[in-house]
Length: 116
Image (cartoon, rainbow, N blue to C red; front, top):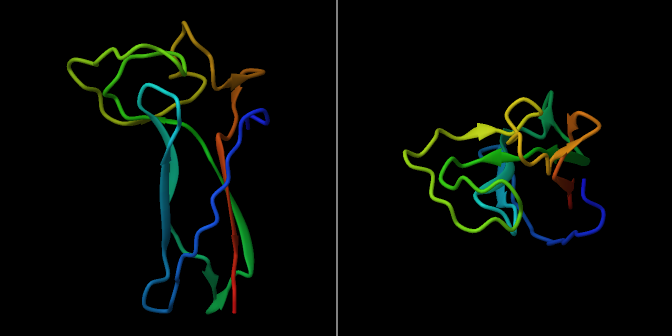
């Protein structure tokens, strides 16, 4: 992860036996149309809620802007592409902003702590 620029938000999410799944998404700012997140995480095993857990997430491209760096000028993708995960194979050749030592590293870390 980029240790030079980080922000943090403290939010409360309510999970119950009727609503056991957690999903979240965030845009990567500044960026052309990149985002990160996760979906349908069920923080319960054999009826026991996880007390604490961490989710590291990776970059995705929304397919609407063809910029290749964080501060690229708007460059509408026409036609739009389908959403795809940015990997070392799909990262734009002219910009490897997410690639480090040949690998894609997480761009966000989500920490959850259950409250009684």
